[in-house]
Image (cartoon, rainbow, N blue to C red; front, side, top):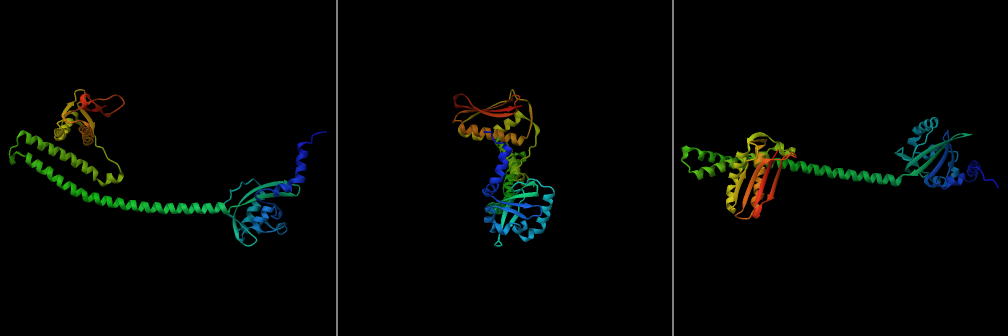
Length: 334
């Protein structure tokens, strides 16, 4: 017994089962000719549009479209038949079908074609897009809600920013005024015409004046509205003597060290003479290091600050434990 050829199988399948194959498809299927007349509909198409098969066969495909789409669809259909091609599902959005009862439903359409001995036949697979449209509308509503929430939050942030700017502007005056008074009086007291000072008094008065200027520089940066709004702190590098800068920083914090009986030691033997950096930020870094060192050093301990040239990896700040619970602060310079 000879085995049937694949061509014979395809012909037999087409003749015997093609209609059943179309009926079993999950989507509504319609076959139309070049003129747009409906040649075939399956049960899913009947269910989707509410027409019987007899009512649709021979009717124009525009029967299943809202009237506002008729003129445009005739033109699109003629263009498609002139240059037929496969068009996947979902490639044309915003399409609507018309049920027999007059209600409209959003639809997705997939088109394919076949040249037959009777001319071009177009197969339209139609899917009810109501659920998709519902979720799209729900998503759009959610996006709109979130957008409104973001606008509200942005408005609140802008208001908070304005209030912050107003607060900082007011605080600028409130903080600078007494601090400038402290600096002014310290300068007056340093003037010999107001009377002599002993060495200890002169040293403490110098510390007050130096610390006041440093604090004023920090306040000026903090209250500079342009820097606050930009979230950017500008650096102003300039060359300065390292040993003198560290000596001045140690002198400023000496009263804090005296409260715990700490011994401060400075080593700058291996450091370069000058460093190009922002002197205010440099002093602030040193203050932060020393503050940590004072915090974690027991009473009567020793704190050492060392400046030296760092490795080729760049500048670094380090704090390490020394012997006998001492704390050593290092400033590496590259």
